[in-house]
Image (cartoon, rainbow, N blue to C red):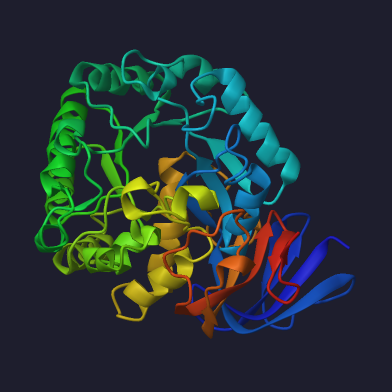
Amino acid sequence: MSAIVLRNVRPLGGANVDVLIDNGVIAAIGADLPVDQAHIIDGKGAVLLPGFVDLHTHLREPGREDAETVETGTAAAARGGFTAVFAMANSTPVADSAAVVEQVWRLGRDIGLCDVHPVGAVSVGLRGEQLAELGTMADSAARVRVFSDDGHCVSDALLMRRALEYVKAFDGVIAQHAQEPALTAGADMNEGEVSSQLGLRGWPRVAEESIIARDIMLAEYVDSRLHLCHVSTAGSVELVRQAKARGVKVTAEVTPHHLSLTDELARTYDPAFKVNPPLRTSADVEAVRAGLADGTLDVVGTDHAPHADQDKDCEWGCASFGMLGLQTALSVVVDAMVSTGALDWAGVADRMSIRPAQIGQLSDQGRPIDVGEPANLVLVDPDATWVVDPEELGSKSRNSPFAGHTLPAQVVLTLLRGKMTYSLQEKVAR
């Protein structure tokens, strides 16, 4: 049975309708649609959105399958309402060649829970010394269009300029991890009042802002596309806002945790709250929320960073940077943005599906909920609440900063080209 009828659903939070899905596409939208030979799912007034797209996911495979695999990572993605993710290049070996990106792409395709689009490394081995094989990765079966050394900053200005120039040939984008290494050596939390009181070495906001300012100037100079990963400071938001006003081809993302958590949590010394870039101040949280609301920050990128227990279950100074994000992303965005009136459901669809699909050049994701469009969809119960239990998450790792938190809104169903990849009723990714 290939046909599905979603009864009583509200596209983008609007009026209740029925949606018929057949052969992987939306076949009809209306009231009392025919149900012959169709599987009926009663949405009970849930919100229907286009499937989410994450520009910033760490799947760890190949090399760190003890922390995550493509299968477990995409299971978490499906449970979070994602139908496409971009897998960052900091695997082992690094995704700096056609062979590695094709391996990751094929794993995602064969598992089938979520489209996996590899992000190619900018530099060989993420070492920041010479350009990786950008052209061959772009021409590979994986058709790479996003390149990043995420986890490391492309700190060499000449290398960054060459990368920006190179990707213009195929309309690619360089996604920068903005962190001046000379200003952050040995630092592991935000530089400010809390770091001073705790006696921990601080990570100054200027380490992020100086790289963003430089790269905006480079992108403007060579007229190329720049994407800024995990923007975390008020100053960074303002730099992006000014650049967009000048017409620079810059886009930017914010993580769910930077929308909701502050450096005050470092007082717990719980490594779950250690992340790169670090959690900032409440003023920075307000600034990134405002930037996401007004479109200065284009997308929510989870920066889903799973870690094996031994890499997080240790003292703060020895713990790895990173947090899980795929399965809690929607709920955190609802709590920070929808519940406060900063975004409506159409805005959520724009920041979590439409714009990331456009930045990543995905023609079949982030599409309107309309007849003839691919049935990449997520159904959300806006009135539900749920408690985050790390043991019940789809990821292989357990390092969620929201463990034990009660969050609003819950993904009920995820469809990838009409195939049910997650159903809350069954509580499994399929």
